[in-house]
Image 1 (tube, rainbow, N blue to C red):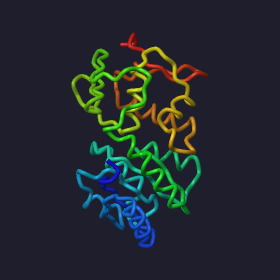
Image 2: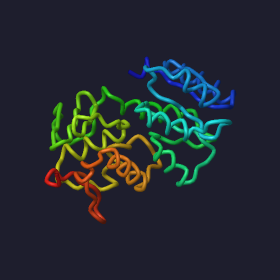
Image 3: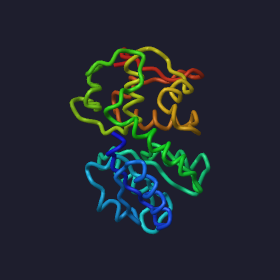
Image 4: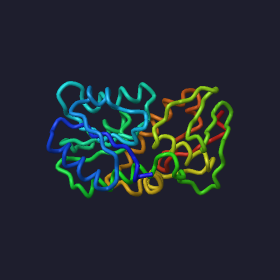
Length: 233
């Protein structure tokens, strides 16, 4: 999959676009570049595999672009590139639908490793779980389709990012089992350094919001972590 993945680089600095494009193309990726979020939205194709997105740009910010993509139901993975490196900035990136966050100045080896890690979590790779994979898991009005990588509430598709779907699948595959935040980080972000426990909470909050009335199926256990409780229907 990675040999033919299509990557969109969005950065208003030409030097950064060129060096990223050269190195990613050398890894076998198909690369498209845009100098602004507005241009990126106009060239973004349906077969785009991943977006490397600068946060601070003239005009629309990277955060706003990611937020617009998610509102439109586009779950393409997004890795933010930014000179900001505080925990709040990182959590802002995750809260608007980002899949990873790389601080500038960055190592090209780090960028390539992060790109490969995020692409490995796309459909076509098994979701982490101790339980045998089943195509569909049904819990009342909630249906999780592992083959299609989709989830439905009351027959309506809820637009989940790759990470949100993996969290839901992990929890739903082992009902009543409590997963600690550390355990979830190890299973879902094993190849992504600098993930904090607060990051897990942000993703869970966003997932539960999208689940609407079925959010009650995912409960937190203070001091322990999260579990999926089918009896909470």
